[in-house]
Amino acid sequence: MAKIQMKTPLVEMDGDEMTRIMWKMIKDDLILPFVDLKSEYYDLGLENRDATDDQVTIDSANATKKYGVAVKCATITPNAARMTEYNLKKMWKSPNGTIRAILDGTVFRAPIVVKGIEPYVKNWKAPITIARHAYGDVYRDVEMYVPGPGKVDLVYTPADGGEPQSVTVHDFKGAGVVEGMHNLDDSITGFARACFNYALETKQDLWFATKDTISKTYDHRFKDIFADMYEADYKEKFEAAGIEYFYTLIDDAVARVMRSEGGFIWACKNYDGDVMSDMISTAFGSLAMMTSVLVSPHGYYEYEAAHGTVQRHYYKHLKGETTSTNSVATIFAWSGALRKRGELDDLPELVDFANKLEKATIDTIESGKMTGDLVLITTLPDPVKLDTEGFILAIADELKKQLA
Image 1 (cartoon, rainbow, N blue to C red):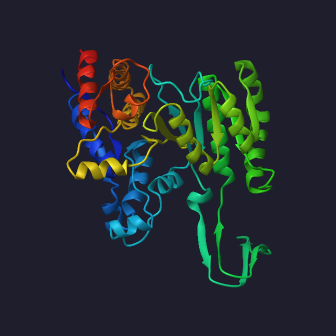
Image 2: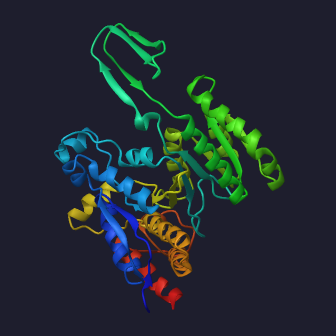
Image 3: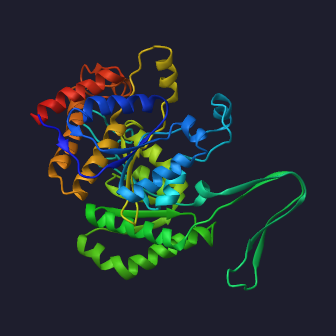
């Protein structure tokens, strides 16, 4: 068959460890045989980020602004152990944090539901979508080690030369640590609007939660912006659609989520969304079975897997041992990016290919062919455990049938 021709490139951000190995397999076996792939490539592997002083991460985000669509492989956020392992110049910030700060927007993460993989929470009947604010908080913080007694103040100096305002963070009597975080009204407003719009598009209830009883200025600002926007712009639309906007405290939300049947959007601040998306994806079956897309209010889309670089499997791979690593979320990152590129460029054949790639992936699992993590939890009889490449090749066989 003739390859599908793309009009506009998408931005391709390569990554680290086992996901980098799968990245090449997915391209070679599931995309390049069928699509004349046009991509602007950026190597976000940790070695190259270190070599470029992390400029490559900034460049990839700016390229996403140019082309509108990006697909990203999982990357390492270095800690002290990684500093030694890779002999890094410095402990570089999270690439995701850097990219999200440049693009702004909201990350929507939803579990990929297949027959035979049942949620651990037995009352969950429908997927729970996490809407994660993708700017600020701890991901754009500044931190300081306080070596001894002294006072730390938070100071605002008006740009117009007005009188500075300050509050004391803490009067230290000994050594400790201090952290400063920020957020922006514009970013919170964009987050709220994206959540309300997504709820209307998908006809799902929207839940939002912070800890405004403790954080009476920072978190309360989120609560107020959501509430004001809902009353002004969305209340009548939600009522007409038969859906609900619901606000509660984050600890109450966690309890309610566990008792719910699912089928709603749970909007979370940046850190809460980071943590809760891993909980939701694992509880639905596997961390490797969750889609993730950053939707920017400026019209940019960045697709990625919600999980990390699968370090343990990578070390096995380096020893020549067989791995059975689940590539579904990374495949869906590619299909999501290709579908969006097709939608924006009016290429229905590319959209159709992306849909069939996802269906081939799900059909392969539902036929009983799957990776080891799914074999351990499936209710399907006599599942076949495939290694990393074997699973991708099985999807390729199914994809060829569907395209034919």
